[in-house]
Amino acid sequence: MGYTGIILVDKPRGPTSHQVAAWVGKMLKSDVGHSGTLDPMVSGVLVVMLGKAVRLAPLLLQHEKEYVACMRLHADIPRERVEEVVKQFTGRVYQRPPRRSAVKRALRIRVIYRIELIDMQDRLVLLKIRCEAGTYIRSVCVHIGNVLGCGGQMIELRRTKSGGFSCDEAHTLHEIRDAVELKDEAALSAMILPPEQAIGDIPKIVIRDKAAKAVANGAMLAGVGAISVEKFSRGQSVALITQSGKLIALAESLFDSDKIDCGKPGLIARSTRVFATPNSVT
Image 1 (cartoon, rainbow, N blue to C red):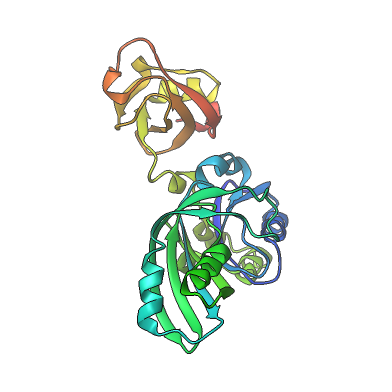
Image 2 (image 1 turned 135 degrees about the vertical axis):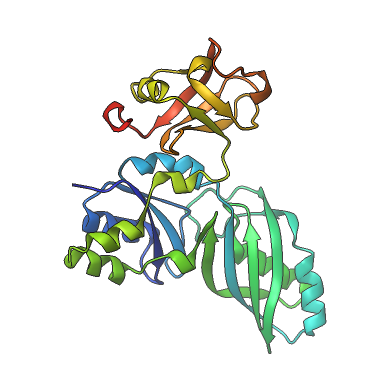
């Protein structure tokens, strides 16, 4: 029987993200997906979704990312000058995906929330970058080198965070394989996180168990089934959860939260991805 949930994998350099996810799926006998592709020679946290948790992909793909990058400059530049230029890359930046990228090389805008110079030795520069999903760190390094006037390139990259998930919480492929081969259910249970772990930042509607069963059957959510709502806008993605915190579905809100009267008639949300089955709601 396959598993449902999220497992954080410390992807090694070499294989593709798709290969890593496929290996995990084969070991755990589960359907899999992953959020945020890492190039083959990039390591770090890869969020692998198992079973019905694959439906979380649109949400997880939007997570902010954090990287540690090693950049090599093509000339000797004073550290003070490098720090000055690096700070200029905070905020909205224009990017065109690198030639080796699998996506269309159209000009795009991405946001860098924080970038800092951690260390510098000769022409090697170590950077920590917190950025919007879809940011190409290789392009950031090239652009920093261009502004410095000497040129530069990324030579190594590691993803340290994806959303609230850190590489410190991730497991190697060997650790997962050992737990499977030893049939260590306790270890596997500790590795596989429930889908609820992925919805920390999304607004929530707490619903009654009767409404949860109806939603699990494909029904839209009515106000009579809602117990409480967090702040959100019409059309925003929300999580429908039970009082015990079980994730039932992701949904699109039909009204602003301040226009919703809990316990009153009228439809308030339309499910977009259902995770629970009617029998799993108690």
